[in-house]
Image (cartoon, rainbow, N blue to C red; front, side, top):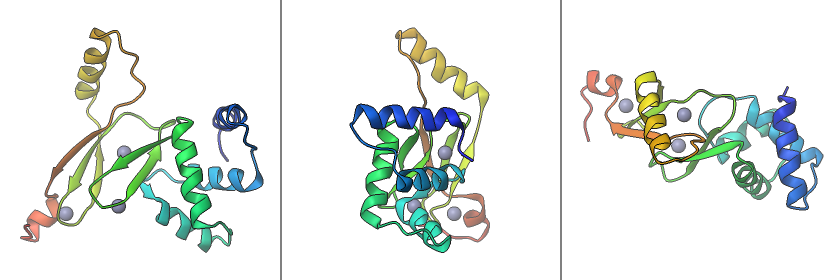
Amino acid sequence: MVHPDIIARYRQYLSRQKMLFTRERSQILESVFARADHFSADDLLLTMKNEGLDVSRATLYRNLKQLAKAGLLVEADFGHGHIHYERAVGSSPHEHLICQICGSVTEVSTSAFSAVVKKVAMSQGFRLDHHQVKIFGVCHQCIVAGKSI
Ligand SMILES: [Zn+2]
Ligand SMILES: [Zn+2]
Ligand SMILES: [Zn+2]
């Protein structure tokens, strides 16, 4: 179940854009908020297809962009050649460790780092919505396996 606040926020955005909260949009919203990972549009398409939901690729791409514009999803580029999405609401601030060999993305959260980000924003009178940090390198598994670029 998607939190009512999220649905309300999406409906508000859609009505401003003169768009309707259709059954299809509702289904996509359900599928998006059923997961907590960083997914690509194709990841989500596969999940929805496996669940027997019929949605076209173009529609899904469009809807994900709309969810990002509505401030419910954040787009992230991890250098995979496609966009990843993750929740902008209902997740705590975190940083990403991106392995340049296997492509794995690990979330790490350091409160000290978040505090610095907050301080920097505040010092500029800036309202912080979220931050996104990408740390590129080689993950522990790849190092142990002796892999290198
Ligand atoms: Zn990817
Ligand atoms: Zn790796
Ligand atoms: Zn993340």
